[in-house]
Amino acid sequence: MTERPAVTIDNLSRHFDSFKAVDGISLEVTSGETFGFLGANGAGKTTTIRMLCGLLAPTSGSGTVAGFDIYRQAEEIKKSIGYMSQKFSLYPDLTGKENLSFYGAAYGMNGSSIASRTEELAERLDLHDFIDRPTRSLPVGWRQRLALGVSLLHRPRILFLDEPTSGVDPVFRRKFWKILYELAEEGVTVFVTTHYMDEAEYCGRISIMHQGKIVEVGQPFELIQKHRAENLEELFINLINGREAANAEA
Amino acid sequence: MSLVSVESLSKSYREIRAVDDFSFAVDQGEIYALVGPDGAGKTTIIRTLCGLINPDSGVAMIDGLDCQRKFESIKPILGYMPQVFSLYPDLTVTENLTFYGGIYGVVGEDYRTRVEYLYRFSNLKPFADRRAQALSGGMKQKLALSCALMHQPRILILDEPTTGVDPLSRRQFWEILLELKKQGVTIIVSTPYMDEVARSDRACFVFKGKKLAEGTPAALPGLFEGSLYFCDCRPTVQTLEALNQVSNVQARRFGGGIHVYLRKDVTLPDIATELTRAGFDTGGFRPIRPDLEDCFIQLMEES
Ligand SMILES: Nc1ncnc2c1ncn2[C@@H]1O[C@H](COP(=O)(O)OP(=O)(O)OP(=O)(O)O)[C@@H](O)[C@H]1O
Ligand SMILES: [Mg+2]
Image (cartoon, rainbow over all chains, first blue to last red; front, side, top):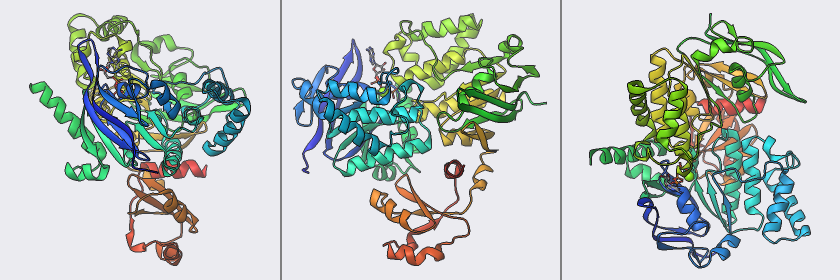
């Protein structure tokens, strides 16, 4: 594996009318990194991820994912990444297996490669117990593992995960992160948002966003030291609180 | 008598026992947390309290009234926020708040005071005229919470209210809950966040429809059996596997390090040679007190 950046963002913005949801952010994520993309509610994380995945056009600035340009090569990007959206994305009436087949076909995989890949993912992500049940009846923790399976079908080298563990209990969250960790050790780049600060500590580097801007980026440990905080939770709260207070005064 | 009481509640869906002979009681002014994995039965318990489910057996009572038979009389004192709360996507933030205010009869000056109060945690004031569908995930959740808190019921039942809410807003939301408690409001809340459990008066660990343990957040970690060490090393998959190979040891990531659990009656010296052979420096193992999460994980795995 090389040091080739998996994601580059340069002065990227997205406005909705006059509102700057993403306001000139720059960032580089190296191949194989587990990057925690944190931030306050409404800071612009989902909007950024949607631009990077070729789902939303930027207003200005530039970016590449897997070396492809986010303006001109959205189709190539979609083929090289896995994406788990913040919203529930599986078909609730279909079973896990059927969902995998459906998305496999959408990626242009043939029947036999879908079948073998499904078996492989079921083993790897421990899906066997529930893969034949309609996804609507599954606890969130299981559904999210299935959704991760779907995003891994075509063996992407970069994963964008938007709050994959929201509403998931500590035990399920640990299982989920163990899988992410294994993927990372195989060199997969993991770009993940979360509001759980213990998960953020699992990341090699994190950034913290507030009102469309990236206000901090670095290794969790390094940032905790720099801000003389107890832990990431305290760091996050102080940082965002400070900025909100400054806004209120201005 | 307790304000809320659940006695020997059972409910099955086909062959699955969602709630299995479950009992608990909550006093006036208490914050009581229900914690457990998905599908543990928390939502079924909550929905039974809100008169939405008929149990197979057992009884749920609020203020001395049966939640199934006398729900109409309970309704006025109860506020309920379901896991999936419906906002009107094409109405703005203000319009949603006005709508729910109207339902609860909170209007005029009362309404304005209430909305300002709730903006303190939601920070949605600058977005008052934005349609709900254009809000971010966490902003929608905060708007839903605000709608549910438009009136001030005597009992508030919240089903995982802070999913997707950022750490600062979560803290500010809990400040509001603590203020409501001070005013005498009784709160029952389900949550996957251990720091929220720590802020409640009492908590109950729920697993497979049964009560695993109940107590104050200070007392619960005392149920942990065995001893616990913090290993200050990078928690790679290999390190964790190596530790888990050592007899009577279980290792788990915790933040940037590893929590090492020793089974009951096993001490660090007992396994020191084995650890050294596996390449660990036992000097790097620091004894620590188990926290709520350690206790929760152990109880779940043993049942
Ligand atoms: N279609 C839209 N029209 C107007 N505003 C929008 C639209 N989509 C998003 N926004 C606004 O852009 C901002 C950023 O939203 P985004 O979903 O990216 O936040 P986020 O960081 O993912 O937050 P969360 O942690 O709550 O998921 C929010 O203020 C949101 O209301
Ligand atoms: Mg988002």
